[in-house]
Length: 490
Image 1 (tube, rainbow, N blue to C red):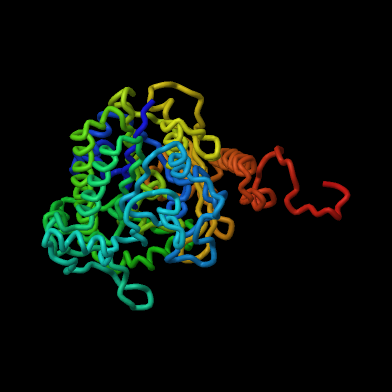
Image 2: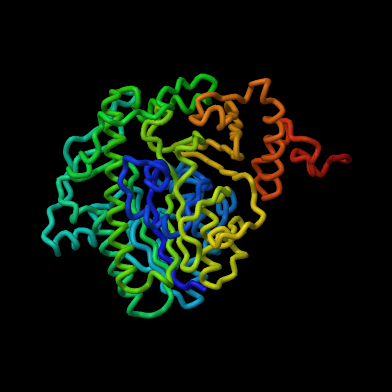
């Protein structure tokens, strides 16, 4: 059994920016070689497209509705800000089995309870963006004589109330070696070397804060890709007709229409540059794994907490819109002895990493109740597998509950206080046409609605209560969610 785990994770990373996923323009040679040596998952989804809840699902192996850490602290409007003290975590389970466990980079899985509280070594780097004022990073700059963080050429739009928009990109006046990304890779290599000397099995995570916006890059990456040669995504033609109004509001919040098409292409070019810069830093860590002779006894994962819009649907960042841009993410797994260059089409989730890591370490995966080990798929087996994925969202800036059922061809999104959505991804891969009210798809819509209802009910997600009374859910109804003890009949 493989004992060590190297877990590489980015933030807000589009799956279509990797060469191994078909992008011939963006250079990602290190991730491409990881895919060539292992398994690429083509239907890998985040449980929720927002940082803290997704990362909490990875840590616990539980869906967000179950662990209840539902929002990022920076935009929290009343949800929990830390996992309950009795929460299961895979890192604690590995520690009990004698593992060294470390995390270099982004934590963002609570405000008061840090990574150290869950048994993870490494500097505490809080927040959602590169904490460039952190003492350890400042010490790194001073040790090497590198200049301080400084940006120019800021790119931003204008908010609806006339205020300057969020910073989307900027030039970084530092050499590559001084970037926060190079710092994280350096610290990861140092900890990897320490663990190699120690001789105990290890779990080491390297979590980059990028390519999350703002895209702050040295010139060689800010200008690496020609913006004039980049086409805007097809969904930039979004009209929001027949869509939930919140999407138009989010577009205004991110000031998409206040920027030119040239600006939008430049933002995509900068995003691509960020992806390449991170890929090069990941390569340093993968090279160190080989140099230390650990590659044949270490499973390597690469994924992201969620995707990014970068202009798709006239949006940036993420939010209450369950499009493929932010829910489908890259997922690469390399396990020594398993087939190389494999591609799997099963629907899998970031949450499935939890049971996989536990199984690799010889731990009981049962406490990761919403997780399923990927090892049978990675080893080339053909187990029975779900032909769908269920995702959820609870709000960002304000509460906004959503649930999604994604099958091979269709996607159903339930928005209780707004317009529901149905997309035929074969006919409309860019999700521009909401077909929820299309009579030709009424039967499919009702079948998917009943199916989602049963899935939510059976997993214990109380979102199904609203569906019981509001939508066609079929005859398989086991309870009346509005019933009281005063009633004599169900």
